[in-house]
Image 1 (cartoon, rainbow, N blue to C red):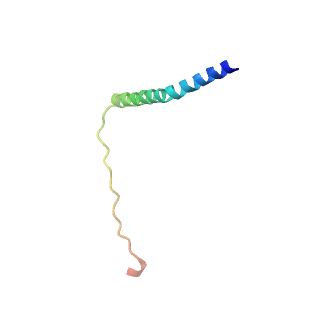
Image 2: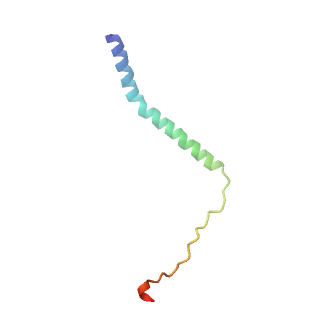
Image 3: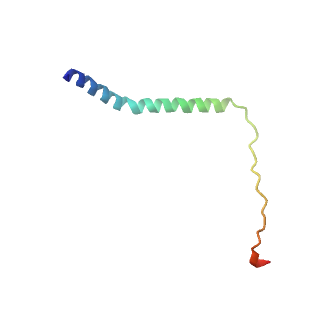
Length: 63
């Protein structure tokens, strides 16, 4: 029984040490894929933002 617990503790410590680095590596691969996909898209002219027309609001007391 103690041998099983020893193996379990070793696996838990290994998971605690390797977990963050594996998570970071997977995150970096995802970012690399996104950058590669963005680099392969054709470039177009940037979209111009159209400002909404200003409308004068009148209060009932001003009429």
